[in-house]
Length: 214
Image (cartoon, rainbow, N blue to C red; front, top):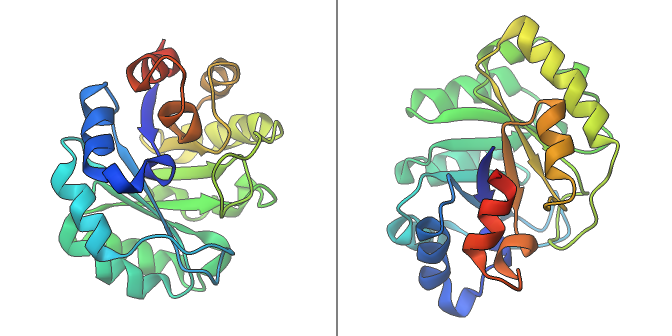
């Protein structure tokens, strides 16, 4: 299991320290939640802060857009050369075009599904995707409880990926911990995003990350 701690749960007064800590503690990706206050009822970070995260990180960035006007934000972050940029299918009128645009920058492209959006929505996009991110909470805020129906949804998506694009990774975001990670792995997940669980773990970030990988 690959682990992508979400910096949304970091101490923003010590952001560089926390980003270095998760990288030194064995994370695989640094998950960056970008929210615009329109698609979701929260406002997070822009290119200046993400640039600072990129400088502190020794692991690749995984940028998750929770925004309106996805193309604007893709262009805003493309120069930072993250490993992945993912965007919500619910907000994009021309997803295939945007996927190709992300790839034109040499960045891997992914699509995000909210909890209510069926996996089958992606059947005709999967061949072009590097990752699908399934939300296991409603997007917009950290610290929410895991929605268990995402496990069945992960299994359905895994079957689609096996048929259409076996190299496409499945990422799960929201309420992930050491209690549900095995269920997600067994269902076919490849990557888990964890914010509160990693940054607020009583035994520290390294123990938290290793417990998700174990």
